[in-house]
Length: 300
Image (cartoon, rainbow, N blue to C red; front, side, top):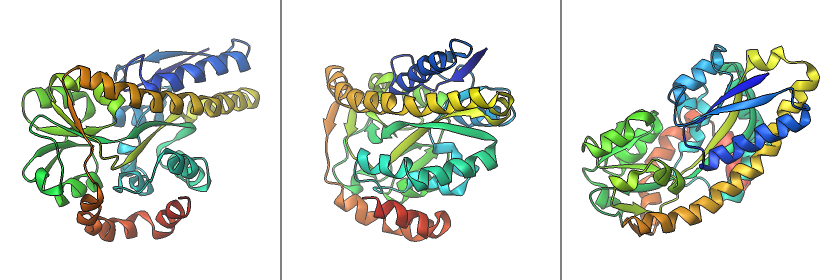
């Protein structure tokens, strides 16, 4: 049986590394009974559509960022809290522990999908066609594309930008046509999406860490034998390190590749940004859950 898997990025992306590993392991663990077919670059729809499609069993499986999940499970807005994670290891401890488990269970219940493994988009950076940012004031009046959730909008508005939610498949054209001046994404995504053609500056801010869980339609998952379900979950677990290593490696590589394309890269001091965003914490932490945020803090 062939399982069709949707990806937002291309075949050389860090997300594809996780999906390919999943397919390899799945084939091995089921003696070739179960295989996958990858569909790249939003071929099966944007992130929200794919999540909804899995929920009603019209899409088998997919890897998408946690950005649209806050609309299903409010706790997923955790990943949009700015400067919450110190580094990748901190994020992995959270995802591989109690918090990751809890979030996966809530998503299964709310969206009818089974989380098979935690891959990632990675740490988000800021890019712009106007100028690099050194301090929060540099964002004043900048039209910035943000992911489609309210916490993201509040974060960038608090920094003085004009936050504009735009669905992922339309971002390149919006940047190209000057509908927005900038956007935020991990370096490998910025490179994979060819944003260097329409953005001259990248500022390394590491302001949020975005996981990208590999998921399957719960209806499809439940249709498999117990033995095959175990194989699917095991393959999902084994796909995690591949996606993470690729993400870290591509972070390094794409920095150089972006510079080769003429992109100017700077690394601002993030402390003033943290300070400017305290109001966002005051407003959103009670909604997301203070104990959940506390567990993340304790994992540092």
